Image (tube, rainbow, N blue to C red):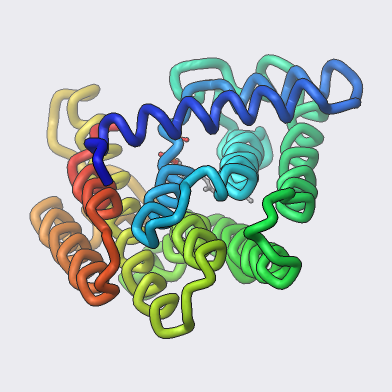
Length: 296
Ligand code: GRG
């Protein structure tokens, strides 16, 4: 690991983005669908999930490039989830990452289909990994774990629980269920996919699962803190009590101070599990630190 994390992340973000462009160029499909898929894939995401996968491969002293197809697949599923989350029947958002949402530009039907196509294509990508280092068994394990993380037992299940929980007071356990599934499972898959590609044994995978569990919750708590701080800045007064907002969040359940404490606790638990792996985890630690202080 000669490079700094900044150099590493720049290099692999560029590699990912050029691979996403290349994949889209080869796609034989009606132009509107292709344009809608490209629009959201190139709308300026942080690429945290692909970077987690590349950093996990680096931790195993493997060439991060061997994770390129899987990293691209994960970013496609993440992109589909955001397109669908913004739809009129879900959050009904007009803006994402400061730009008009997919359905605002291409219409609702095209946005639904762009999400569907990204989801499906992601599995095609993993099933056609060319590298001689990746066996058919590994590809199967990558696909099975991916389906579980993205589907009814993972992100989609979390989204439904989130919709059901709207407008009612949740307890901490219910809130945690939502976030572990809606956000945590795909983040965790990014790490587990790296470990599967590196052919890690089960005990290492367990430790990385524990790391990712805490990382996912830290990511979400930071998201809630950022949302609340953004709202307070906008209206110029402190919010966060139940009268102000019906949606349960970490700050609304624990207070801002309690949410910041919980964030710190999850970050240190994540780092504790990383240490236990005895891998070369410098980049994974850097990502963990970034998640704790990120401001977008
Ligand atoms: C519609 C099946 C379906 C699922 C949607 C992930 C999700 C489930 C909805 C997103 C809602 C949301 C804003 C959740 C908060 C945490 C989160 C996932 C933020 C967005 O992820 P980032 O910060 O996004 O990695 P960028 O823009 O950097 O790609």
